Image (cartoon, rainbow, N blue to C red):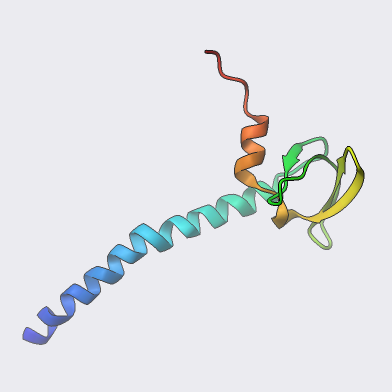
Length: 96
């Protein structure tokens, strides 16, 4: 019974790590995959590198999309699109 008591702090540390580190990362990963899957033509987006554009074409074979910018059309992987920044861009303007 004493050996179980000595492992209790280690088990507690793993539980805390799971609930404060791993679970939020898993949730965020699922949200990003859902966001990438729900992209459609005409969506205004921002890439993780900061490039602004509009989705012109989606390709499900290689999970990419073509984005129209002021410089022209560029092909990006869907995982390169920033979920947070794109949501902020498309959010309705709040009244002050």
